[in-house]
Image 1 (cartoon, one colour):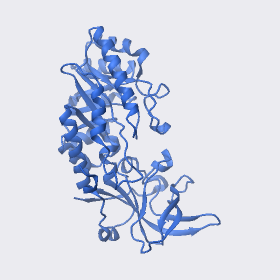
Image 2 (cartoon, helix red, strand yellow):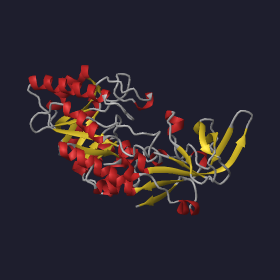
Image 3 (tube, rainbow, N blue to C red):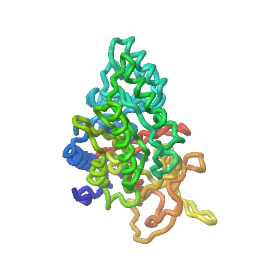
Length: 387
């Protein structure tokens, strides 16, 4: 699909009437992205789960469930939201290193498709609880393959230093234990090496690791019905209109390197690449402040509405939507929160900016609304949709 078919157009008249800050979601763009994912994944026989943590907005979830994706969960709250949105329980994969008893019980009660188990103690607890409930728990063992995805240290998940998964050196003992436990059905292996990955090399390395493990286990007479390679596919934060969607074709084709056995299914857990580009944070300039060295565009939106720049040093394209000027000036774009880290961008070129101008912070559909807070007793951002 031509990315330019989804070039972002903002309804400025509606924006002017709305209270800021708010998230604007372009559902046409979301649907086109889902169509692209389904096209390439279905052609390859892959199963895709949506990572609910990226954006748990009820309407967003309903659109994704309607498109036929499964759900990737990391909390009981996400499970409840996914069920309410229409995801089938069988399509749900539940990850996370700290699943509590009530969350495990909730998954067993609903008959979710798979628990992605991250430790031996967790495996034992799931077995015990499944036995108490008179059922069998489907699980995949999450493997930490010690692959550096070369992203920000806070969104790398697949190295030996991370808290996630079971190291390859300990994997065999955990697999053997899973096969022994009476209330566990071992479905497969699960991997996730990080987030905002824009080069295919880390995924190629993951494929090689998966192939080696599959060969090793085949020699032991152990075969898995599914392999889950996680997600983490990145997007273009710098030029969203040039690349509304990632190259899903190349992404899915990369995993054809995995030598699947007869009957084996390959599963994915995509989040950011599904929803990031359809969402924009809209705020209004309340003051323009000139210091000795800097000019600040101070917005009514802050890190409570979009924490990624403060937390991950993340970059977003920022645009002045209403400036009548064609001249550019350089600003630090900041929020009103009482923290020095409440900065969206340093030395950001914007068309000459004045009090009252509407500012768009692009590519904010993932880890924006879902991470918003009421710190400083601020209100949560509003929501606007466009079909």
